[in-house]
Image (cartoon, rainbow, N blue to C red; front, side, top):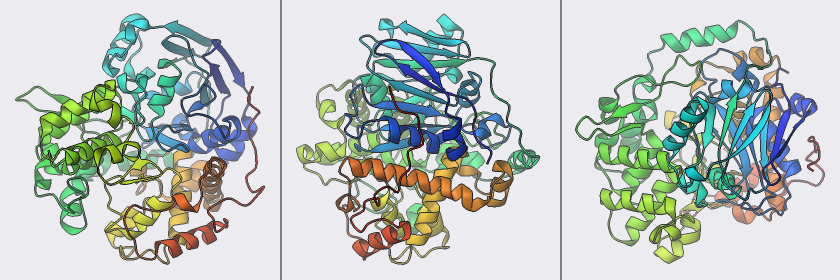
Amino acid sequence: MRHAQGPLLSVDVSDRSASRIDIDDVLEATVGGRATATALAHDRIPFDADPFGPENRAYLSTGPLQQSQMSFTGRMNMTGLSPLTDGLVSTNAGGYLSRNFAETGISVLEVVGESDELLAIHVTDSGVEFEAVPELENALVPEVSDYMERTRDLGPENCIAIGPAGENLVRFASVMTFDSRAFGRGGLGAVLGSKNVKCVTFEGESAPTVEFPAVQMDVHQEAAESDDRMKRQGTTGGTEFINDNFSLPTRYFEDYEFEHAADIGGNAVEEKKYKRGACSACAYACKLPTRDEETGLETEGPEFETVYACGSMQGVGNIVDVMQSNELCDTLGMDTISGGVTVAAYLKSEDAFGDADLAHEVTEQIAYRDGIGDTLAEGVHRCHDALGVEDYTVKGMEFAAHDGRVLHGQGLSYAVANRGADHMYAGMLGLEYSGELDPEGTLGKAETLVEQENRNGFRDSGVVCAFGGDYVTDERLEELFDADFDDLLAVGAATVERERHFNNERGFDVEDDWTPYELPDLEQAVQEYYDARGWNDDGTIPADSVERVSPAAD
C-alpha cells in the first residue's frame, strides 16, 4: 500500500529538544494523515492526560498524496486530546502548507511539553530552531504571518499559528494556516496555547519521492474542466435548498428555517467574491475570497457552516455581518462553528437575536476571555447552565449545520461519532439530502454509517479533500494507493477503533452516545451500530482488539 514517508519529528518545548524517530512500520500500517497521527496519539498520550497539561501531544501529519500534483490534495491533518470534548480529535485544513511541510523530510510533527515563554518553532530539513517571541503575545493570526515574513522571509503558506483565542485557552480555538484556513474543530489551538507555542514554520528541499500512476492527472484535468456550482459558491451553494427542503437551524435551534436564508446564501456570497481561491496544486479552486466594496471588509468565505453558525443561528441576515464574524474568528483563531453557536446561545440568553454588533463584540471578548467572554470561552456544554439555555452539544462539541432532528441518519452519526457533533466524521447528510437514503428513521442505517466513517477515516489519512469524491472515486483510490478498497476501509476502521478505545480509557461509553433531542429508536440504532462494529453493548472496544503500533514515548 502506498503511504507517506519520513520520520516522526518529536519536539519537546519544555527543554527545547527535538528528535527524529523512525516510524516506517507505523506508516506502512496506517498510510499517513489522521490514521498515523491517531495511532501515535493513542500510544503516546497518557490515557489520563490533562488536555492543557504538558503530557498532551499535538500531531501535524501529511499523507502520501501530498507528494503528488493531483487536485484535492492540498490538505493536512492535526490530532490531539481535545480540551472541548476531552477525547481524541482530528481535524484537517487546506491551504498551501502541506508541500512545504513535506519538504522538511518528515511525515509527522509531534509537539509535547510546556514552554516557560512564548515560542516560535522553525522546522527545516537540517534541524529545529526555537525562537522566543514575546512581541507576538496576543498577536492576531495575520500579524504572526507579517512577523515571519519580515524576520524569516516566510509566508503564511509556511506556517501554522494561533491567535489570542489559543493563547487564552479558549476551548474551541483553532490552529490557523495561510491566515484563513483552520484546523478548526476540537480546540487544538488551545493545546498549542497551553504549550506556549505561538507558531511553527516549515521550510526545506528534502521531500521524499513517491511515485503515482497517471490517473492523478486525469483527476487534475477533470477538476480543472468541471463547471460545478461549488467552484463559484463553495459550500454555500446549497443554503436555500437545505433551508427550504430540510432544515437550517435558526435562532439557537428555536426554528427550522431562516427567513433571510437567501440574503446569506450562495448567491449573496458569490456577489461578494472578487477572485478565485484554491489550495495547493488544486485546479478545482472552490475557495471564496470575498470583499464588501462599501466597507472595505475582506475575508475568505464564509462557507456554509459559518453562514449557519454566525448567520441563521444568531438570527443575523446580512451577509456583510456574517463576513465580519468569519473574519473575526479567523484573525482571533477560533472555530467558526463552535464560536458562532456559542455566541448564538448567549444571544438567546439576552433575547438579542439579530444583534450583529453585539455578536461581534462578544466574539472578540471570547478570544481574550474578557467579561462574559470568559464564560463563553468554555463552550456551550460548560456554560449552558450559566446562560439558562439547553446544552445543544454531543460529547461537548457544538452541532454543525446539518440538522439531525430532520436528517435522522445524520443525527445517529452525531450521537456515536468519537469526535462529537461534527458533520465531517461520517457524512450521512449527503446521502439523506440526495434521497439516496431516506432521512426518516435511524434503524437499518448502521452498516451504511460504519462504511461512511471508515471511508472518511481513510480519506483523512490519504489525505484527500472531501470535495473530491466525484473525481477521486473508489476505483481511482485503489490505483493511487496500490491497494484493494477493502484494505483502505480497514485503515479507516482501525482509526475509528483507536479513537474509541482511547476515549473508553478516559471513561466514555454508551452514556455518551446520545443527542440532546429525541430521535426515533435511537437507543436501538446505537446498538445496531455497536453490532456492526463488533463492539460491546456498553459502547466499549473488546479487550485486546486494538494493537499498539507506535514507538514508546520518552
